[in-house]
Amino acid sequence: MAERINERGNERLSTPEVSAEHYERVAENYEQKSEAKVESAERQAQKAKHEALEQAISVERGSSEHKKTPSSTTKRRGISKKERDASFHQRMKSVQKDMSTSERAFSKFIHVRPVEKASEVIGSTVARPNAILSGAVVAFVAVLVIYLTAKYFGYPLSGFETIGAFIVGWIIGLLYDFFRVMLTGKK
Image (cartoon, rainbow, N blue to C red):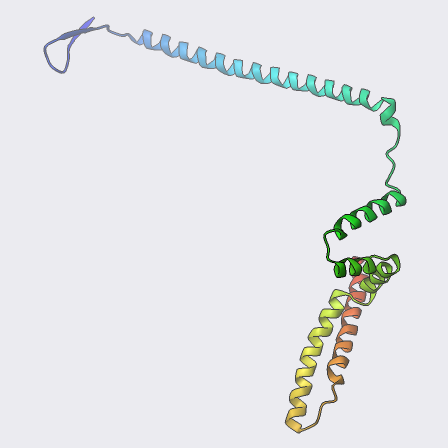
């Protein structure tokens, strides 16, 4: 053992002399412990994987047994038209309770079957969004040009210019929708 003087200089401390062999033994000990930890972690991972597989198999067996029960072998049937109509009428009555008298009357008129069907047909054919938008844009631009031209040359306007320009733009919008659907196949 070697003696060392501490910082204050008055006490003597004895420290053991450590050989290189001692350092090697300590290093080997740490290596063995770290290898054991790695092996332990690998064993735990394998064990967890095995347990997960067992659980998956048991769940799969349980679901296959569940499929074999007689109540689940019957096919799920869709909602019938009668049930759908009854649900619709029930919902309409509950919503119309909160409306004023005039709103309720308008709602009843709008939701009569022939009016609904006519509205759907018109909305899917004549009143297309692109047709209305293009009609409005063409009407604005054309009427602006016609008005400025008529004002410059001194011609009077008849009032049909806006309607005519809207119809032309609306037809352009319908043609655009038609050709877009023909080319892409998407509505």
